[in-house]
Length: 544
Image (tube, rainbow, N blue to C red; front, side, top):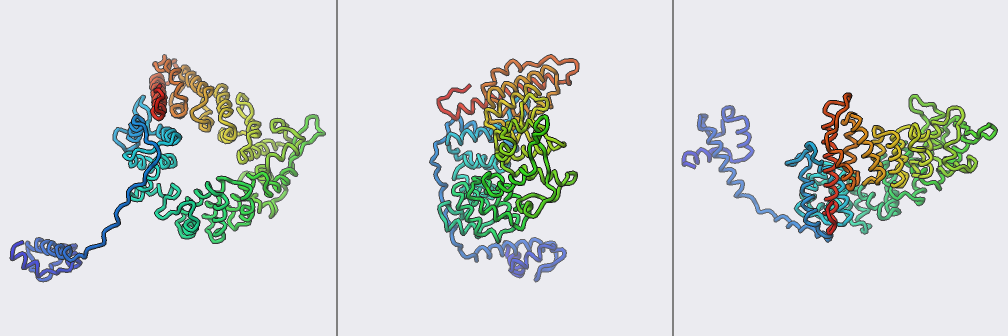
């Protein structure tokens, strides 16, 4: 800085705020004090700012050093085999937004294989490679469905990293013990302090984690502050009792039936109705049984229904909603709620000792069959009763592919969830063999992965039939996507004959043959890739 410039700078204000106030409107509008206006003024102001910066920095007092970063915790699980670690890196590199990502032609969709890979790695107890943790957390950040498996695989080091990067804070909320001061589940004082002082998300996470370890302790914690919680918070906390619901929860849930929030009362009633031995279930059984009986005076025994004529205060307290939706009759609305909440064990004794299949087969008088069977469907789903679900589903080859109560595919899917995996797969295979794939997408979604051989064969055969018939291939893209993720990798060899471009019938969609060929190529490639993935996670197992 020259002597003249230093002299001018010395005459300028040395308070930083004054310099800023002068500079913001510009020196052509505001001249700094002690300086004549002119072309040199902007440079003089900058020189003064430089000098002030030096003075400000020189005058800073030394700050306390930051606490030294603690090392990441150890992960005692065995490391991934080298081939599996390379595969993980490839799967993570294919996520949206990453270089080289995106699906092209017959190439597998690697990101859609990541959930299965994580499930297999977690089942084998492997630890995540440290260098893969940032990409793994980024993938979980973008896809909430990945988070439970990804955080379990990432282990304690994921929480350590999440405290250093705001983008990964979701891991602190999602993982038990992830909060900055979250107590261990064996620290009663810390648990109580966090429950009383923590943020809502921290409290939900704490309650859920504690419920999985000690259901009674979680319930006791909730009872302590129940009266002071907001209605929307009480509803969320009450919902956490679904995990591990047991008869010991009945007393607390009975008190919740008197809650001032209707949503809380309805949720408490729903949970109590899932406990067949509860007092509420007995009350609902008595009400429902009074409405349904068998008339033995007719030529064929027939179920007769006398729906409630009113919804009294006791029914409302037990969760019955008095006001019917638009387009619904009040009496049928009340009847459906009573039957849905009554234990299914009520009906064999009430209806002549018949089995669920025999009860469902009985005619129902006066047009009440649809309402009654639909309520039994909802009860079977709520109570996860396999015998009733089986009866209401009916035979998969039936003209409407289900019992009278299964009025939609969504309801059939929920009923199927109560059956064991093998029976579920056999029923859906029979449905596909009779009705094809066009209606089966929702049903396939509830089947265990990998699909059992009968189900896998039924899907492949139905796809082959659709291909040979020249059907629009785009309408089967959802089923193809499911098949890539759910077919057993051993099915790949059966599909080799379908890779060629088929002859297109005259009425086929233009380009359908090429699309089918490309789709089957992608399916075969993906199945073989899945087989290789599993082999890499199991040292000593040969790749297919």
